[in-house]
Length: 388
Image (tube, rainbow, N blue to C red; front, side, top):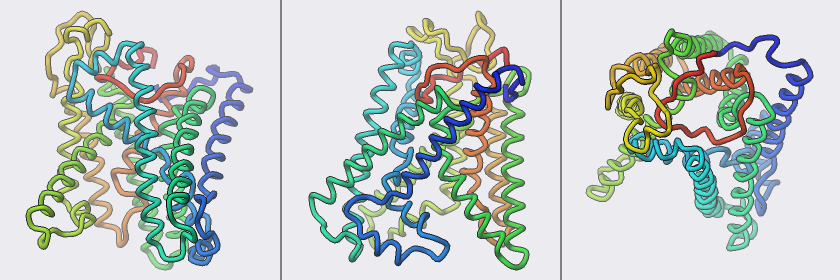
């Protein structure tokens, strides 16, 4: 695991997979420079920042939604598996798993259409941006963004099968990498100690995150499997977001004059604490035994479990190393952000996801052979590859 033997691939095969990966990323990048139909591109260029129009147009490009619709659909699937063990065991059966994947893609396209409709309405409210507002413009935006989502799902599958690592995770973190790269360039051009200090602290957080997660994967026996840290952090903060949103909506309905802006609530330290608690809850629940009724036939077992041994209903103790590492990484990044005169290049939660996705890619490269492309859904954490 996390190592790629030199003899694993022939050199031409490695070159071909790298070429496919770079080609997919290039297509994604090119699409982010294509504005949505019906917008006044001239107005966009006039309002673009001085460093260039590419990043500005990317906010209203056909790739604006990125992998968000698919991620949202996968979060719903993974959350259901986390809180409903029998569904997790049912989905672990290959035939049922394919049904779940098909339903997930369909849900992602529906979510993309709904988000595109809301974005179209918001763009019409910008004075002068939409010369001909109305049904035609909204339909064009919905069709463009939904089609782009479908293309990204297909590109992710192509990268998974013919490229390096899992395409979903690479395309998910690609925008964050681009944002981080631009912020590094911006910080490097600043005078004084603020810029270099921020870059150094951000690099330190990334190194610590990678080292911490790699230690969990390399332990004997492993404390986790490659995709679990990513999903635990995503689902934990998704739970926190749902709780905060529900509380804010309730406050708006009961006392609208006292309700603060939602952005202020989401940025409060309480949200961070809820996210950390959510990660602990999700990690514990995902260690529940899948060997319940029909789940026994799937053969899925928790991380580190010996086949044939008794499996406890909930093994919270098994999740302690993972929870401690994830909370420690986020807390360390939060402390670094307070030490720095400016915010870090990326917030700690995104750095954690970036590190986890990178290790997932390395794990995929280290496997003896590539499996057929599939969505990154999972049931209860599976036993790590004994050859890793």
